[in-house]
Length: 150
Image 1 (cartoon, rainbow, N blue to C red):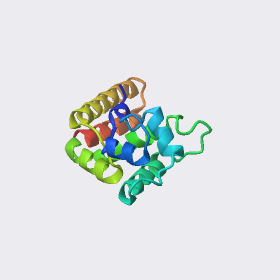
Image 2: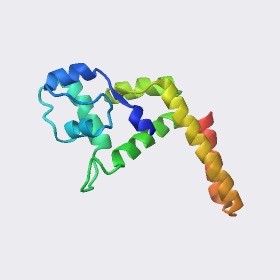
Image 3: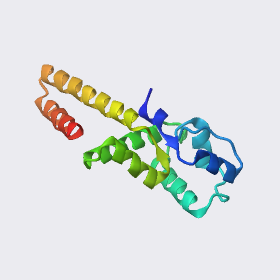
């Protein structure tokens, strides 16, 4: 299961009540993306609307014909998580920041698993690059692995 499947809308019930629409709690489910991408958000309180619009602008903004179902929102969010980790934040702090930035959250344990999987993937890339004689790529994977592991 992808980490983006484990990202949830904070105050989900309150938001659903304000816009008088039911939608899943998962931030990246199809119905939730529909509401964020094309729904009427005018009934949301100003602070919530601003966070929802920030989320939409930062993750749902691409030129694909199949947007928001093209996979770019999920990839952008994964990059956002990796950038938070690169800033030295632990998973608990990452949750705090994503909640503050976009009113979404995850369980810290899910972020620990995501980061552990990322490190294991980089180890595999490192090993394959060395076997294939691509020392520059192996060194890059080593650097990125250290960055995530600190």
